[in-house]
Length: 427
Image (cartoon, rainbow, N blue to C red):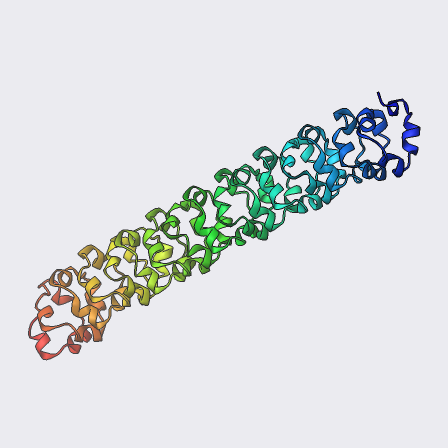
């Protein structure tokens, strides 16, 4: 047995680094926990790799956090898996970055409780290989403070299993650059935890990452998170845009709505469209609204319908017929003027009679000419006297013949005087 074990702690503490460096492995293996507890960082540094590797587990765990600062990269790499597993949080907190890097693949042996001892600077110094080797249990144990220490490069090195294991508090602490560092592996984030990402982190998603989000993840994005998405991020969602939660759809910014592709507009669900605000509806491009189907148009609420411009109504075309009669009354006079002649010609009598006087007067002369016999005969006693002089003058002689004996007395003197002789002769 080595005589080293007989030395008192005072004697051990007084040994020079040269004396420590002269230890043989038998000496090191004989060191007790009481003796190791008085080691200084300089003495531990001098112990060497061969001697460090044979330390008793109890002796190793007795080293103070201050002394652990003396552990070299080579000595750390010499530690066995069992020795690494025995290290406590305070001891790990005392390790220099170089020593941590020396652990290599043995980093997986660190217990989750002990891992809590690592600071942000230490975590920032881990090699990508070590980060990649972290177990799911270790990743799950990272605190909101610790996660901030991982660089974007280290985030890229995390395995999909580790990414999925990250807790909500850790995710909430991620910066935009860290989220960007995840790359396409952002799709590995646990769907239940995705809502923990801050709006700043959401803004950090690259277009490629936004495109990689699963429908399950998109469904759980909150209104504020959706509001943080840029037009470039939203424009790559494709058909998956239909997965956005209906209740949160109004959270999308006007810039994001303006960036929708025609394919995405086509994919929008009627439930999503019921949530469209006036600002969002106004932000949709003419090209985008042209892709709306009649059922989608019919899903629009009064606020969104009222925000449609004449140009957009023209682009929507006959899909406007998806509106119910009551919904037509929400259109502005400018929007009414944008109705195509094909749309006007196909209006039901209920649609036509639901229109207000100002809306009817907004009909263009081409729209008036497009009215069918059924539509002409559906005009009410309030609508006929309200026709403008220009509208009267553009009624064809054929259309004049459609007015019924009940309707003719409803023309005003101004309207009759505006008619041509051929028009009046057909009354």
